[in-house]
Length: 129
Image 1 (cartoon, rainbow, N blue to C red):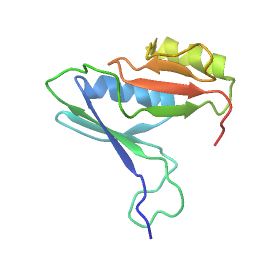
Image 2 (image 1 turned 30 degrees about the vertical axis):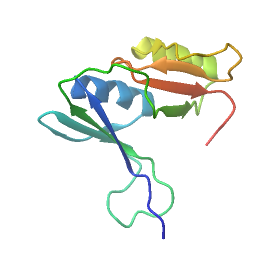
Image 3 (image 1 turned 90 degrees about the vertical axis):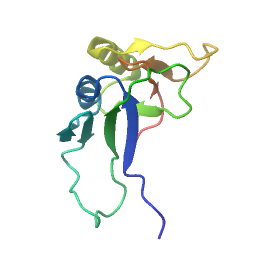
Image 4 (image 1 turned 180 degrees about the vertical axis):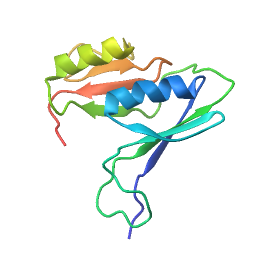
C-alpha cells in the first residue's frame, strides 16, 4: 500500500491568525493548539490510522522567526464547491487574501492569491472534486 497525504505543515509568524484564515477558507476547525503550533482539519473526517479512502489533509501552522522571502515552491489549489470562481475569489479577498503576482500571462484559467502572510495559492476555474 502507498502512503496517504494527510498533513501540510506551513511555517508562519502568526499560527493562530493564519489558522483562522484557512479555517474560513476551507470550512475547517481547529483540531489542536499548543505554544506556537496550530493544527486545523475537516470536522467530517474521523481521526485515526484506519481512515479509508481519500482524506482532506490537515494543515499545521508552526511559528518560525524568519519571514517569507520568495515565491512558494509548493502551493494549494482550491476549487469552489458552491459558487463560481469569481464569487469565491471575492469571498477570499474579503477574508484577507490578496492578489499575488507570480509571473502570470493573463491567459490562465486560475486566479493566484496570497494568504495574509503572503503564501500563494490558486483558485481554479474548471476542476471540481
